[in-house]
Image 1 (cartoon, rainbow, N blue to C red):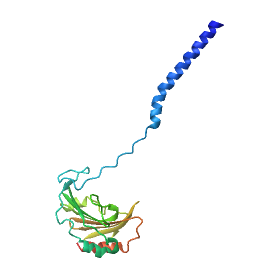
Image 2 (image 1 turned 45 degrees about the vertical axis):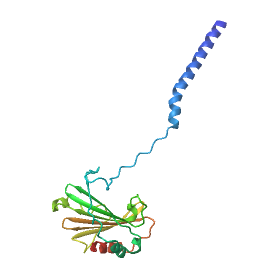
Image 3 (image 1 turned 135 degrees about the horizontal axis):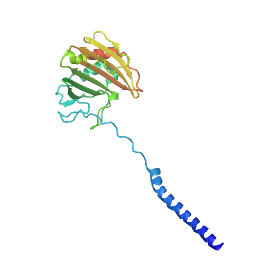
Image 4 (image 1 turned 180 degrees about the vertical axis):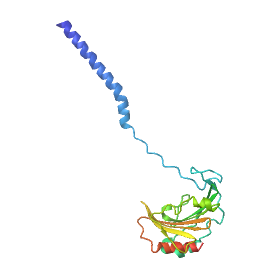
Length: 213
């Protein structure tokens, strides 16, 4: 009985030691996993339109130097006059220029509020005027106009062809007018914060701003 009891005690002790070792082996990784926080995915890279001219952006565009008069029209006075109170604090436009397969685009962003030094204008609270010059009619035909519009409506008297739409986004409301004259497409986007009051007669105001250019 004594010998048998000793053997049982030895087996029990061996099993206990094995259990402790197994727990230790499993416990290390498990404990580490429980305290590890998954890192947030990095934000998608944004094209730096102020980068060195000649740089190729991720979408294939080549960055160019905008001319000194790229944002001269419409003037700040015309913007205030045509858009009214919403543009009372409009700021000087910031220009960018790109080229892609012969199509040259110049974009001017006019913030509707003062912008802290060293920061970019918020596109959701700004007037953006883009001019796309296509090399020929064939390249223009491949674009598929109008672009990025929710339920666009044709507009008469704003170039050869034109469309207007109101894009309701999660954080802003966009009033958009896109116009075509020969091989030039002009797109005017007035974006206001979603909490702002609805714009009064936005289509007429954007058409008037287009005519002032």
